[in-house]
Amino acid sequence: MRTPPARRTAIAHDTPLITTIVAGFVLAFILGALANRLRLPTLVGYLCAGILVGPHTPGFVADQHAAPQLAEIGVILLMFGVGLHFSLKDLMSVRLIAVPGAIAQIAVTALLGLLFGWGMGWTTGGGLVFGLALSVASTVVLLRALQDRHILDTDRGRIAVGWLIVEDLAMVLTLVLIPAAVSIGTGDSATPDPLAVAIGRMVGVDFGLSGIILVTLLKVAAFVGLMLVVGRRVIPWVLHSIAHSGNRELFRLGVLAIALGVAYGAAMLFGVSLALGAFFAGMILAESELSHRAAQESLPLRDAFAVLFFVSVGMLFDPAIILERPLPLLATLAIILLCKSVVAFALVRSFRRSLGTALTIAASLAQVGEFSFILADLGVSLHLMTDEARNLILAGAIVSILLNPAMFWLADRLKTRLELPADPVPPAPLPEDEGEQPTMLTGHTVIIGYGRVGSLVAAGLRAAGTPVFVIDASDARIDALRAAGGEGAVGAATSDHSLARANIAAAHSLVVAIPETFEAGTAMEKARRQNPALRVIGRAHSDAEVDHLKTLGADTVIMGEREIAKAMLARLGGVEPAPE
Image (cartoon, rainbow, N blue to C red; front, side, top):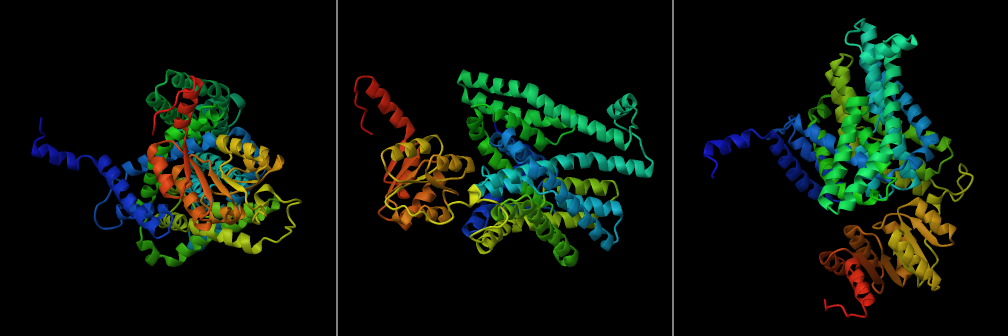
C-alpha cells in the first residue's frame, strides 16, 4: 500500500528524532573523516557537526530536546563499558590518591571560580556554582582520550578514571545540596523531601540542609550496598542464563537491558546519576567471565551514541561569544586548562607518583563536560547565575574539549623534556617508566598483545630459547611478564614509540596477537615500513580480515575457526581438510 503524498510530507516534518539522528550521524561522519584526514582527533569533527546543526548557526537546526537525551544513552553505555573493565579492586587500589586528590582539586577550582565571579560582579552563590561547574571533567572525553592512547588499563588510566568517579559522586551530592541551600537562604522550604522529613524526625535532625545531606548519603549507600549484595548475584546469573540458551541476539539485548535498566533505576530510586548507575552495573558484571563478551556486544552502540554526545555538546556552543566576551572566555579557559592542570599535577606529585602519571592526570582534567552543563542549567534556574555565566561555561567546555588532545600532546612533550635519569620523587622507578630505552635484543620476536593468545605464544618461544619482546597496553600484564624474567613495555600497538622500544628494525619476527583488526593492520604496516625483511604473523576472525591484514604486510594470518576445524578433523582420524 502506497503512502499518500500528503502523509509523506507530514512524516518528513513530524519526525524530529529521526531527523536529528540522521543529521547528527551523517554530518559527524563527514566532518569526522575530514578531521581524521587532517590528522586531527575525530571528536573535533563531531563537535563541529553539532555546531552546524545547532541553533546558533544558519541552516538546519536539530531537535534540541532529543539530542541531549540520545547523548545521555551514550554516556550510560560508555560508563557501563568502563565498569566492565574497571573492577572494584581497581577502584579501591587508587582510592588513596583519587579521593583526596579529586576533593582538593574541586575545592581549589571552586575557590578560583568564586574569585572570578566576584571580579565579574556576580553573587557569591553564582561564583561558587561557576567554579564547581569548571571543577568536574567530562568522563566521556576522558575515556575516549585514554582509549585512543591505549592507557585505559594502565595505572595512569585507573587513577584518572577513579579521580573522575570521585568527582561525579561529589557532583551528585552538590546537585542535591545547592537547591536545599538556596531554599534555606531564601526561607522557601516548600516541597521538602518526605524521606528527609521522616528520617530527620527519627534521628532528631532538622529536615533542611542537614536532613537532605543525610538522606542523600543514605540513598547512595543503599544503592552501593544493593549492587554489592544483590546485584553481584543477580546480574551475572541473568547473563549466564541467557548465554546458556545460545541465543546471541537475546544476550546482546540482555546486556543493554541491564546497562540501561540499572542506570535508570538508580536515578529514579536512589537519586544517583545515570552514568554512575551504569558504571556500577558494569563493575559488578566485570567479576563474571562473560564480561569480555558483554563488552564486545555493547561496543558498537557505545561508539554510536558517544558520537551523538559530542554532537549535542556542539549544539550548545554559540560562536559569537568568542568575539563578544573574549577576555572572560580566556580567563575561563585559563582556569580549565592551566589552573586545574597545575593543581592536579602538584597533587599527584605530592603522592609520590611518577612524572608521567602526574602529566597524564593533568591533561585528563584539562576539560569540562556533562556535569558542568547540568550545574550551569541549575544555577540559572535558581537565579544564582546569569546567562552570561552559563555561556562562558559552555564555550569553555567546547574549546577545552577541542584543545584536550593538544594537552595530551603537550604532556608527552613535557615528559620527554623534563624527565631526568634519576627522578628524585619516587623512591624507585615505577613500572610505567621502565623500558623507555629501546631493547638491546636483536633477531628477536616482537609480540603485540599479551592476552590469552600472546602469552601462550611468548611462553612457547621462551621455552624454545627464542628472545621475545612484548608490547601490551596493560601495566598488570607487563608486570607479570617482567616478574617472570621477560622483556616488555607498556604502550599502544600502533605507536611508533612502542615499536622503536621493541627495536623492530632489528627483529626477526612480529606476532600481532590482538583481536582488533584495524589496530593490528596499522601496526603491521608501520613495522613492515621499518623492517621490510620482517616476518609478520597475525590473527583474524573472517576471510575479509585475512585479506585486509595480508594487504597491510602480514605473511601469515591465522584464523581461529579454521585452525579449530583442522584440529577437529585431525582428532577424527587424520581426515584432511578441504582445500581453501
